[in-house]
Image (cartoon, rainbow, N blue to C red; front, side):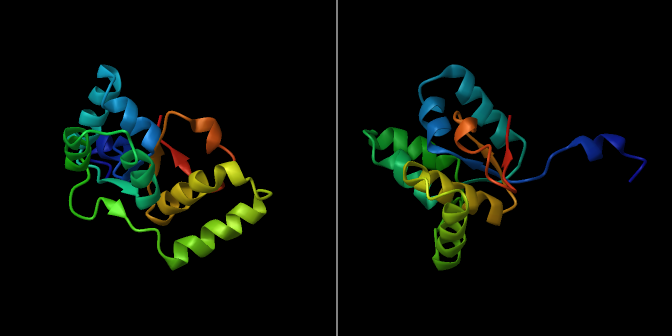
Amino acid sequence: MSFVPWLRKMDFRPVHLDASFLIKALTSRSDLVKLHNLAESERPIRMSSVAWYEFSRGPRTPNQLAVARSFLLGDGIVPFDELLAEAAAELFRALGSPRRRSADIAIAVTAISQGAALVTLNPADFQDIPGLALEP
């Protein structure tokens, strides 16, 4: 691999979007550019079904939902299943049962399970979650 040193600098990890980022990307040019750059990087873009719920509950127009969904191809919305629920519950208890953060914990556990970095506008809400990579 030494003959292609630039390859070591490339990040191939999938990214998971937090609802806060996706909401802002639909209204802010700079965040939309970041989303387009992520899509062009060919890194898989996914989102926890919990974050998709937070985003979808709106108010969103059908066009906003369609544009957002277009970045989450194929299996882009990751189901919050029984195993993830158990892992999130364990982390919830380990963090002192912070009820206002229950959705954030579920979103974080989903990203961790996929080996993904989380893109969020609220990094302080996630910084104490062990094993979670935050995308700058």
